Amino acid sequence: MRNLAFRTGLVGLTSALWLAWGCGGGSIDGGGSGGGGADSSGNATNSGGAGAADSGQVVTIGTGGTGQGGDDACAAVSQEADLVSRPVDIVFVIDNSGSMGDEIEEVEKQINANFATIINGANPPIDYRVIMVSAFGSFQSREICIAQPLGGVPDADMDGLCDSIPAAPVETMNFFHYDQRISSVDALCRLIDRYSIADQAGNHPMGWGFLLRQEAFKFIVVITDDRVICSNNGTLWNDNNTAADGQTVATQFDTALRTLDPAQFGADAMNRQYSFWSIISQQEFMTSPTDPLGEPVPPTEPITANECSPNLNPNKPGGFPSNPGTGYQALSIMTGGYRYPTCALDYTDLFTLMAQGVIDGAQVACEFEIPEPPEGETLDLDTVEVIYSSMGNEQATYTQVASEAACTPNGFYIADGTITLCPDACSVVQADEDAKLDLRFDCLDIVQ
Image 1: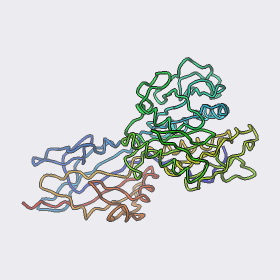
Image 2: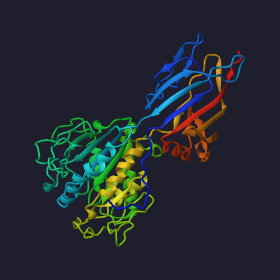
Image 3: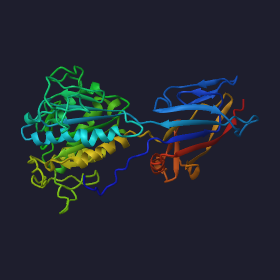
Image 4: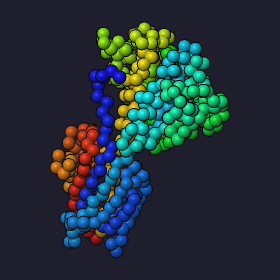
């Protein structure tokens, strides 16, 4: 694999975050809405709905030390949270038209060698599943078969290809195949109109959407050498090979997808639960004499109407482009995904980057529920401090800001009963395998 000029970065997901609360009492194993407190008799309580345990944190609360406030000092409580990965669902949508045989062969090889292998090596393990939306069969017929270990079809010679093509896909705990033929230009429309309809083989009668998990972040990956032109609900989606029409198509699809299932994909554009990645026939990016294939195109780069070159790979002349896929490009830019040219016929770099993106997408957010205080007490939220330590040494004190809009590199904010680290602070903590956080604040007696 070539050296990439961008940083992908494996994130340490094994951090243990210690949250030292200023109030509380008793002992609770598990987690509830706001953690736990104590009733008037000093018994442990667990109030509310989904809390740390529901969001992937294993919580233990116990007493110790003393706090401040009121006639009787309230007991200090510590909360240990072991970060585990958020589930991730990856949906591959692959064009089955006549020009796609070589591209599909490359996908079959890379999806095991440089995608599933990297994800399977994450620590702690990533809870992921791959959902293939494409016609099942041989790449020589422009169909796709996923071999072991991701899929279930034997691959004795370990070339990434199925040794033989069975009558139906062989699925595993991490792989599901929704058998649906995709044409040159209709991938986006098929995602919408087949969401809750059986595949052509009848293996998934509830549609490909039934295979998704609501709690999972989604990656959608379209692989095609053509453009977008199809009809959804009587509306034509046509990127016309231009940036402006590509952006229109991206907005149309994004709106249709989120409207179709807000719980899965996000109720609004500010809270999308998916990222769209593209292997399409757009022009190569950041090429050089020693790297004619170029690098994956980041979402900061604009749409290009130029196509990729079919003969840049010296080991295997590339596939021939049809159209640059401006609609797919716009979707990747809109949702923070990367792009790569189909012509390369070597998708190692993008599949590697995508695997790292899946690992990053599995991070737990830097958000911590505020626990219910003991009866007769209230939390003085104005006194909150967040202390970040690593390897036993204090690294920084994070201070409270008024809102997310007011975030600073060493800040956090409180909203709707949740303490949230600002983005820069969150990035530092999540990248540190030895990170610990102490949340300190005071309690006050409620005056009757």
